Image: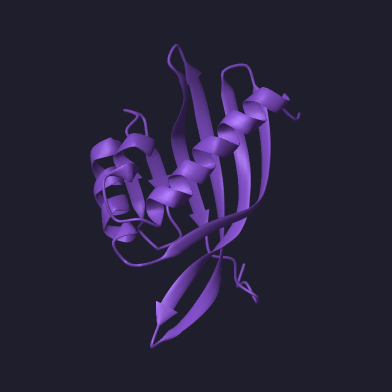
Amino acid sequence: MDTDDETSATIRALIDQAYQAMSTPGDGVAEVFGHEQMTVAGSGQGELLYGPEQVISVARMIASHDLTWVPEQVKVWSRGDVAWAQILGYVEVREEGAVAQVPYWTTGVFGREADGWHWLYWGGAEPQENPRV
């Protein structure tokens, strides 16, 4: 159930905007994650955020940590006014003068309203080489 080129390009632009906002301190995350139904299940235990106030607050904090979020492979599907994307990439983490690329995969869910597409859900995962489950 792929999607049409226009929807795919629009969702990809939202993903690029979100990853750029997460990489840059400032207010960019508010524009991306401001929908009233925005929800996040991050990669950390207990990292569950409901509504734009919580999501934007944590996203601003993450954006201030000098990380670079990179979406490498993006696959988009849609059905009606709902689209979802599998985003495979990494986060560049700077520690002790070195840069490490930490794999990070995101599932994004998007909804289309009269004013266009919006992020509704971010599900993050830091895949492990040897997962326990």
